Length: 198
Image (cartoon, rainbow, N blue to C red):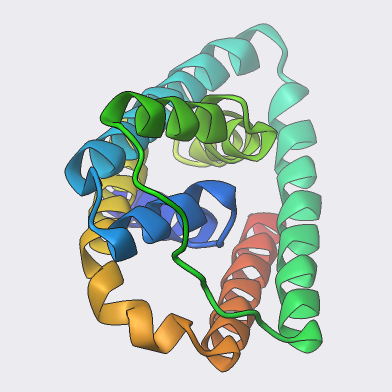
C-alpha cells in the first residue's frame, strides 16, 4: 500500500499543476463540451505513459545501474524547479480563467487535446521519466506504484472536467490561482525533499 499511496500522491502533485492540458480540460468543463471524451482521453493517455515509464524504467535501470541515482537527483532538481516556478507564479499574481471561443467538433477537440498531451514534453517528463524514476524506490512494487499514479490521473481529470462548473466562479478570481500555485509549490518541494532523503 505504501507504493500505491506514493504513486497516488506524486501523480496528483504532478498532474494538478495548471498547464496547457489542464487548462483545456477545465475550459471544456466550463463550456460543457465533450467533457467525458476529453477526460477519458487525458486519463487513458496518462495511464499508457505511466505504464511505459514504470515498466521501461525498470528494464533500463537493470541495464544501466547508474540510471536510477541519476534520474533520482534529476527528479529532485526538476521538482525543486517546478515548485519554485509555482511560487513565482503565485508571487506574480494569478489571472482569471476565461472560457471563451466558439464550439468545436469532437474530432477537433480530440485533435487539440492529443497535441496538448502527446506533444507536450512536460507530460513525458512527468509520467515517463519522473514517475518511472521514483517507482525504482519501490522494488517489486512497480504495479502498485503505477496503479496509484493512474488512479490519481483518472480521479483528477474526471473531477476537473465535471467539477469545472462548480469551480467556475472561484477560478474567475485571480486570488484562487495564487492559492493553487502556492499549494502546488508546497507539494512539489515536499516530494523533492522526500526523494532527496530516499
